[in-house]
Structure formats: C-alpha cells, structure tokens
Length: 215
Image (cartoon, rainbow, N blue to C red):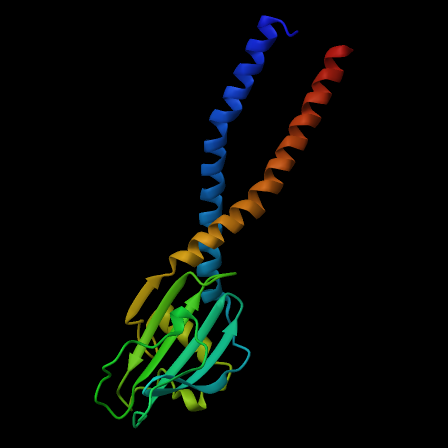
C-alpha cells in the first residue's frame, strides 16, 4: 500500500500534467496556424511557372464552359470561359473542386465571360482569389480554350500581389476547411518532434546533473 505523502505527490503530478495539456494544445495550434499562413503566402512569391494548362469542357445545367487548369507548388489555377449559346437540355458533366465552381447564373450579356480563380496553400488550398472579365480588350484572364501554357499561373500571382495585368482580384475568400486541416496537420507534424527533442535534451541534462551531484 502506498504511503499518504507519496499518494499526494502522484495526485499533484497528475493535476499538473492535466493543467499543462491545454497550454500545449494551444501552443501546437499557434505553431500550426503560423505554418499554415507561411505555406499560403510563400507559394505566391516562389512560383516561376506552372506545369502547363490542361483544357477541357465542363457543363453546368444549360451552360457549357471551357476549362483550363494548371498547378505549381502550393498553387492551383482554374480558368473558365462561358460557351454560347446555352444548351437546349441541361447537362451536368465535368469534375470541379468546390472553389473552382462558376458563379450561379444569370450571366452578363456580353461577348465573353471569363472567370479565373487562383487558390494558394499547401497541402490544401487556404486562400481563394477570383477575377472575372467581360471586356475583350482586357488580356487577363486569357481565353480558357487557349490557356495551355505554363505562365498564366505566374501572371495570376503577379496580379494578386501587385495588381498588374488583370488588376487585383475582384473577390477573396478564406477556405476554412483547408485552413483548419492544414493547421491541425502542421501542429501534429511540427510539435511532436519538437516535444521529443525537448524531452531528450531535458533527460540528458538531468542525467548529467545527477552524475555531477554523485561525484
């Protein structure tokens, strides 16, 4: 049977560990949030070019779209251009991520309607930026049916950062699901090794202190 003083010490240690766990969780989430912000912002500055656009058509109801897609590390580019005239029969065809989906109709009565969307963040997109254009004289977003080069994604980041070419994005949103998932992932990946290193260093220091005291 354990003595009363030893039992009290064990209860005190358990209480301290329990009180420290919310603080550790908070630190882990802060580290995860900082890493998420960094891996959302950095790709915009590091991109040189993409891998080359892939072009296809997608259908949403009576509206068909040219769709070009490209990517680089931490970046995803989606370019949609409305195809006229509307279809006589509704068709739903072609996979798009939620952030790539075109705006809901009705659409502007113009010669063209282009929608370019840039998503930033790794491994999941966190920041969503969108340009829309109805003016043939504006060069950005480029026509989706010819957007098979590897520089459009760089042009999009240049517009996002400096407002050149297509100007600043007309819409910006945070993709909260991606932000939460990335934060949790980085918290788990980064805090675990840091805690192990701290524990190893602390154990090594304790052993050295004990050896010095025994001399």
